[in-house]
Length: 385
Image (cartoon, rainbow, N blue to C red):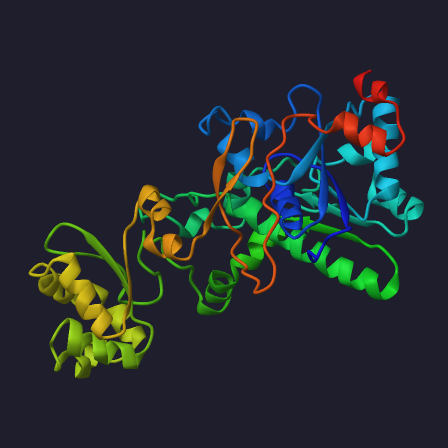
């Protein structure tokens, strides 16, 4: 039996954060009913058409769900949602600020009406405060939390290449809902929880926050290098390829000098005797490392790093990651269904010894509307007016 088998989730969701949370619940066996606009559906369906005509974001976030298309601007549409929520265990929504309240499905109303229901709202900034009505998207939250100020090079502040604010919010919604389900098992009562993208990504900013608050200055933008540890980051080999490495402590520094740089005297050099000193004398040390690496190929450097037990990596492209030998050996790809035919999908990263995730097909807009209406005792015509 899957862990969340028998749990029904109704999700009034769009874009990334809420769909990511609900998809992970679906992976664990929950029934996820995705409420979409008739016709167009979740606007993430239109982000691109790169996956056999489907959106790459939507394919990633929406397997194993049922799609019901209803117009919540109509009384019939709201009646349908109300009947679904009466039987649901979890309600998730990430509409623009105030939208669910105007529809009559605000947390205070639902808590009174359905005391068993776990109600999760995901927003940009939270349900109160001066920013509560402000629209939020991933890039903007990365800016507001300071992520962009410490990402990129000294000349060019940059956002993360993936939607880390959305992903952070989705992960905290997912873990919060699991916690609420455990609590309800003990108390029999539902609860209301909210996740703001600002606060979710703010949690991930813990190290630079403390470094700035108590260190007196902010971490610098250092590209792919670490702002406060050295050597940690990319180094160019003699064959023109980059090798990334990380020296984390004095034991590793000594082995790096002995086996990688093959300079035993360097480990006792006062200029490099601690991470703080190595960071202060970064330019000098960078030149010493580069001089050695210039005469070695990337494979020779990696061989030395492995001998010294120093963490390292090649700079892979996305294509190289897709074909990564570790993923292939561990059989981490699975085929799933979709309106465009079979597609590849990565198996979720938590591997259970005695359970396999659901990984069902990706739904078309409103694919399950008629089936769901009949199941909940409503006329099929309700969903078409």
